[in-house]
Length: 477
View 1: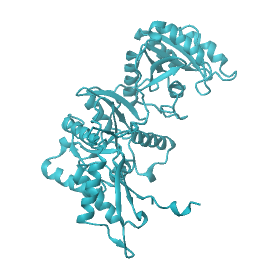
View 2: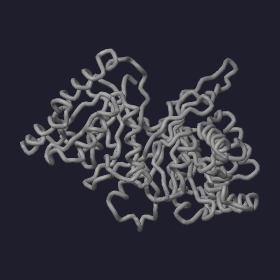
View 3: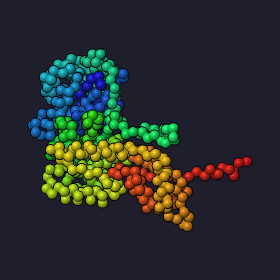
View 4: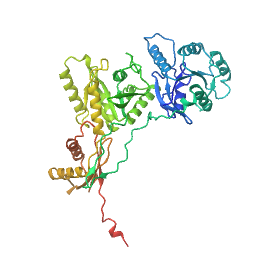
């Protein structure tokens, strides 16, 4: 990426709205309530042919360093230090406030280039505030309306001038911030003997992991421990995380993109609009992830909400891994782990042998084993099985345990193929798919798991009526 831009300003001046405008997606939560954004969020942005990274930050507030607002301010100060240039956003309609002047002084002390941006300049209501912005000492402000997309050309020019043309238009590979991980279209390849050549498991592509769970389960603390820095805002308060924040990390030479999500409470308890937006953002991260780490509390494991979250992950077809957090507080560890694994088998029977890994987000205990489990289930989630092997298996199970006769007629299984991976999905061509009992479908799925080592991930089986090659013969003229 050529350069990094941080969006700075007091609460409710439109920082997240500008962030979404530059990114071209509604990634950051936007609401009229001041202080919606708490963590700093990084994404790829562009204005025309100008590509850069942009950081959305929490609104700067004067507060004690140990308070939540003080910790939010520390995250913003880190963003200023990381960025090549800061966009100092002010609200032209509200005019310049004492808070704006205090934070202008903070930006001057940082020694970083600053571009003053006057937001909410649609109409004439912001003209007085625009001229008042000269008093901040950063020269003429760039007039924009982040909500309506006005003034982006002026902002483009200001950014190029601030970083220089060589830096602004440097060619580097872009890594998509929030695109869905789609499976590449599969085309079978055969060797000279006619055997299907299966693609090898590719570890070069970035691995997308979402971390989900109930509020205060330790999701943000776990990610901070994994990457080895205080990247995400943490604390004893429940519900600190609101936006789904992505963090890039290198693990054993492999690029990992971690997504922290807001805690998911019971649906009946989610009343406020802002919490609904946060949960919706978290669900979106689950849909776009490949592996989902479900963080549960070792002291109260597999409560109803934990099971519902895990069930959602499985229904979405993601590869699940259970992280049992706060393991440092458990005394009889061996007995407790056996009990939790039994709970997992009972509560989430739709996926056999779920990977359950005890961890401590506070001390880092268990994180290497957690990542080994993630790599293992991701490989299974991407596994492709040769069609010839599948059909030999189909012949074998029909010989030893044929489908039951329904209404006196036997169901014939003719052919099976793997329709897709991520998750492994198999299509069976049979004579009467509508009559196939669910019990026999479950038997086939469990047999597939055992035969082809597809434990710990969702497996889907689709029954389809086989085409009759003689159906059109009698219709010919």
